Image 1 (cartoon, one colour):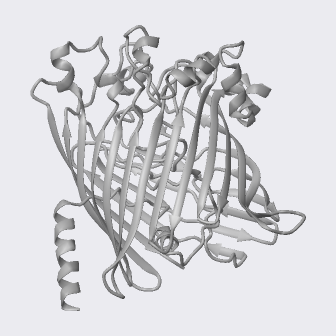
Image 2 (cartoon, rainbow, N blue to C red):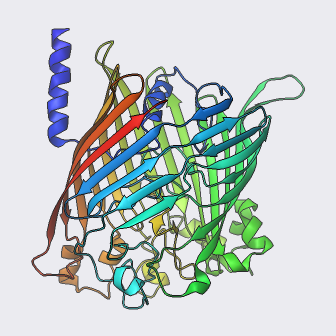
Image 3 (tube, rainbow, N blue to C red):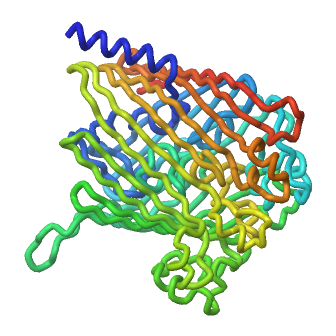
Amino acid sequence: MHRTRILVGALLVFALASGFGTPLALSDVERVPVEFSVLQGKTARPFIGFKTLEDSRYTADEGGWQLYDVRWYSSYNTSAPFGINDGGLWQGKGFNTSLSTGVRYASRHVSFSFKPQLSFSQNLPFPYTKPDSGLTGPGAVYGYYSTSGVDAPQRFGDDPFFFWDWGDSEIRFSYGPLTVGFGSEYIWLGPAVVSPLIHSDNAPGYPHLDIGLTKTTLRLPWNGWYAGDFEMRAWWGYLTESKYFNDDDSDNHNLFSGLSVSWAWHDFSITFNRIMLSKWDDKTAYTLFHVATPPFVDILFSGIGSSGGKDNSDSRASLCFDYLLPKAGLELYLELGRNDYSPSWRYYMRYPFHTLAYTVGLRKSCAFSERYQGEVLLEATNLEGSDDYLIITNGTGWTSFYEHGRIRQGHTNGGQWLGAGIGTGGNSQLLAFRLYNPSGYSTFYVWRQNPDLGYSFHPSRWGEEDAETHIRANLHFGAETYQHLDEHVALGLGAVYTYEWNPTNGQTNASFWRCCNLTGQMLLSYTW
């Protein structure tokens, strides 16, 4: 026992000195210990690859009226914006806060949830990269710095602001596994813990209609043998650009069409996700239902009248693999994504890495004593543009994973990324350690990132001697803890130190090559 205490104490000291945790995620604090139970084989997930608040109820539904927890989150950034997977909240420089609570009603076939999020950002000024000169209106001042623009403002105007997000609100009808719903619930696709490629809860919720089948067991009709578990969801949503993209009101909204299909055999699962963004006013059978077309059709006919990736819509797809070994306390997962068709089926053979992105991860449990148990997380994500774009674009640069030439807003809603919160065109590597105790858990980790390398590597911006020095890099160190003080009140505290190299791509001041940001975080939760 004495050795165990020394080991745990040493790990705590080391982690507090050099660890980092992603900012306290509002939607995950209560799910974290349940997912640890899944890793140990004590609990089964009620979903496979499509996860929302309603789909991720790990315990039996009591029905009737229920009150959601009251959650008040606050953060303070001393020098630059920092924060991901936080719904409608934008965590800029200065003070940021959000409040979320609500009510739910459920009967045998109908459920209703109202769980909005109200947030505030002080939005203090900070140095950032000058937007591309081709942008107009607010985008020319606050916009993203890539060539195509993308509706991901570096700063949301000059003033503090409040933001209302409907959050995890919806009305749903279910009959057995068949389910139909309308609302704005955050959608998380695939097994990634921090950076899913296609969809996360990083951006504000958007109104959408969905229909499909919840996780259900398949059995052969003639002998009743187990044939795996199946899940399918299709949805159509209404995306809105931010006020800081452009001054053209004719393109403020895009149509989101999505399909997620999953199959699991015991502890192994495969999920296929496909989405398409199109102009809202140009709705056709193609923009509404093409996501349901089998992928091999596009492969066989790409380049033969289908216009490949040069159409007016912006498509992305991913294939996810998840393997859970509960006896070993181990989970391995992989998500492979693409954001464009190849010019022809032959191109798939010649260069299958065209627009390829990935997130790969590992979770491993470890036990120190009956009271203290741990979990290690490794996750790496790559969203860089593929090298063949140098040929396709005649040497003018790359097109990154969340950009598109005609859907200029890119893969965003309300000015924030719909997929991985790290943003487009870069990469990240996360190493985390989480320690569980009877009243909660603490997380410590280090996280390295390269923001959009498509900008840093663009051949027309820098000479050969300057290109290497213009690469941006972030290194985050931090620690956070979430503890239940009693049966009703829980408190989360976190601190992050960020070292950023070349935060403005060298555009602001030749001497401004380094930035250090300190982030303080607090989450107070009350359970009725």
